[in-house]
Image (cartoon, rainbow, N blue to C red; front, side, top):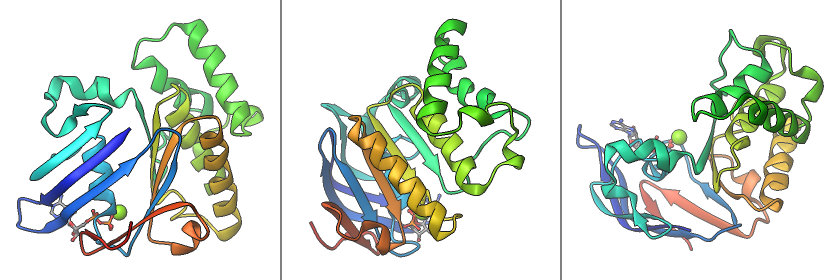
Length: 217
Ligand SMILES: Nc1ncnc2c1ncn2[C@@H]1O[C@H](COP(=O)(O)OP(=O)(O)O)[C@@H](O)[C@H]1O
Ligand SMILES: [Mg+2]
């Protein structure tokens, strides 16, 4: 479903973030990218959701090379992608329900559709009874579950998670990884980038990144 072929990324300041990276994610897989801070993990995710363009190489989403996609097409590509960040990025002035609903409002979903999908997703992530709370009143783990609900409410083909447990204690980390597993089992492809190798222990598909290069797989 996603394939990177001989991808290089050098930022405008000359920093080489990725060097000859090739990787493949099949539909339905749960894949980890692990590596220390500065290894290039976030750069890989950014190339997939077109927040950055590769300096060289191909990034295939299905059979489309998104390295060359027109800027005006990027919002449409992103409808297929859910994204979760370390710092949750919730809107403080909106309730849990409203934060999740926003993802559907921006693509012009009907009110009926929004109601149905947001309630369904909030029950899926276990936050049905927190729908009226504001993010500040939630634990870190709950806030991340809101962010995950927002990322998955539109049923994307792939969920990208950049250090999703970076701000969480070990117990909440397990909860979040369990939730991502549950989402994957429903059929969504999941890609997690983390500097924490423990998360990827005993996992089937793990790419290790060091100084911009994949050193395994
Ligand atoms: N916008 C940018 N401009 C210049 N250098 C960048 C930019 N983004 C990331 N980098 C550099 O690229 C390298 C890889 O960064 P990143 O992909 O964020 O790694 P990771 O997510 O593994 O910590 C680092 O050296 C980082 O400083
Ligand atoms: Mg990063």
